[in-house]
Length: 251
Ligand code: 13P
Image: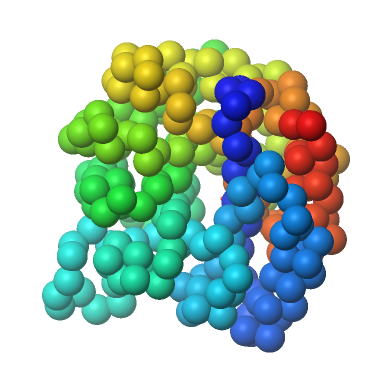
């Protein structure tokens, strides 16, 4: 954990909630309770259709297409996101990879996001709980392949999210201690790829069954620069606890 880095907590709502009314309700509760917290960047990544609703939020998108414009039915470009004031984009979430997003697509999307001046939240993580072997291999595939064609200077806008797939939505989070070990591996590789001065400033965050009962420990003991929260970010009071607890760690 870089103590001088402002922590980032991302509410990834995935394909929820069902209505704009409910989206506004959840957001209003969270915003009211957390807007005065200055040492945490709270970013909301709602479904695309709700982005214009959450005008007061710092916003991210859950995905983007890699072409600038044209005949790509159903897709949304980085320029369009920028025009809406969106600052962050999740790239390569395991749920998208499971739907067929290849490493090549992730690479193109990451390049597009970073070259557009948006911040990319690149998700990497292993499928099975196989501590010794799985993660270094996955990292080589996912981290290295995603960063292959990216200029070093563009990596200033990178955030790496370690999201072990087996921990997503299961209620079985990684332990903060093991997550800490993984961040050391990630950081070491980032140093090799980007050089010390850039790599030391790339936030590494954790996602996978984050809740109010473990969030603080991920920041404190896991050395995380932030959290990527799924299910718990839709439960307004629970998410407020996560943000408030994390903000206390830094005081
Ligand atoms: P959960 O917090 O629901 O496990 O989801 C994590 C995630 O995938 C965030 O992107």
